[in-house]
Image (cartoon, rainbow, N blue to C red):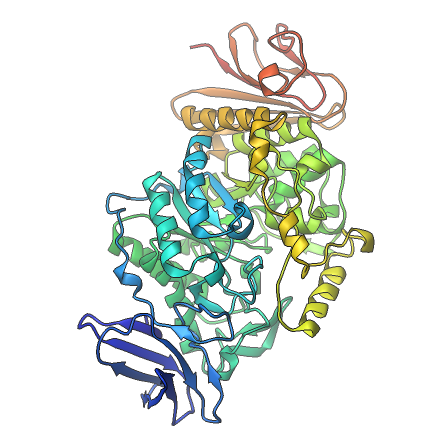
Length: 605
């Protein structure tokens, strides 16, 4: 790594920081001030004899200001306090046999460390990993863990991007969690934020031109990736991406809101990051991935270099959520106004982007390009995630908005689609507790600005009466999972459905192959049924039939039903259905489904 504090191969402690245009910089530690040696490229460095692990230190700028290390590995006293020397290479890893998993096998489970368990720490999450493995997921996705102000936050306000948050347990606790995930056969995705820094404790600007006024993000000043003095800021973030993969054995990074990364260099930061991650994967001899969140509907994010793309390994496909959400709940507000009807759901299932050059009413312009030619493994989909629950749904989950039957229907479409599925914590058992946006800033003026900003940004979704105060601890506490629900109905029935769906996705090659080209989708926009046919290269076929209405409907089946086996029916009593018979009514070439029901069929072997 170019910056930070680390233990050298010889057992000494080395410090390096980039502070251009400064002749005198001091390290303050152990009650002493020590000058750093300035280098020609704006970096300053100092080596102290001996292993100083556990030593707290700060940098003293020319005017006497004391600041934590911009590349601090640990902030045990919070964003304003001293940094601590940590030997991340000393952890006793037990995952030497872990070789990672193929991207197409990723079934992600997104969790927020602070609300996933009552204690809200890395260590507290470890006992739940066996449950996740038995559920059928293959990857744990952690919302951002880099040091943020206070003890409760989504993590997108991080300011010490190399330091796992102290309230979660700090560096070694994160290493223990990753090691435990690998022991359970689970990959780990870490959410990282390279488009902005949080407002409190953000001292990066005081060290050099890390920010630029040439661009503006919705969250504050843009980072300087293409202006004067941008070489070192680029290196700071490129190193950070490799740091998590190397020092913490992370398997993939989810890049937050890359549409807020502005770079008009000949070689975009994302392309350079992909190259460095690929090189690290070769060095470690295991697959490592970048998964971007993008609001651009631009295939170039994941397109191969030969076709002019950045070659990011995959990206979130929010169009799937929007189309499914509006099909289940009949329309939406804000950005959801651009979606509605099963035609959009069929379009995103077969093509990816719904807006591929079409006119967007919400944006008031034509938007996007085609992703129809790209394989399904380039996209990750969800019917719930942290953003969509907290922002578009007033903190309410589908369990509150749609009810049990539609929750089951959403699960079927999500887990039989030809993409990489993501499950949001608690979704699999129908958690009814909300998931709100929350912070714990120390500056009251900033707190009020956050409140007002949330009101303004999501005015189309949230009324004043429904607004959950982000700063209130009660907002955070209300968002914690209630694991006791696992033992109660209808939650246990929904969990059983998820396990069966994930078993089918794993066992049936036609459901787990991410092949959009081996799929056909048909919808009836009047009677509101959807039929998906998935195939494998070996000729295996699976039919998914869904009723998106409150009425009983007949769904036609190509060919005869006589040779078909019912693999799953959401109306079955084992999944909380109230039907008397064991199967839905099947005739020669059609199946009858009750309100919001779905069924999965396959030819008899």
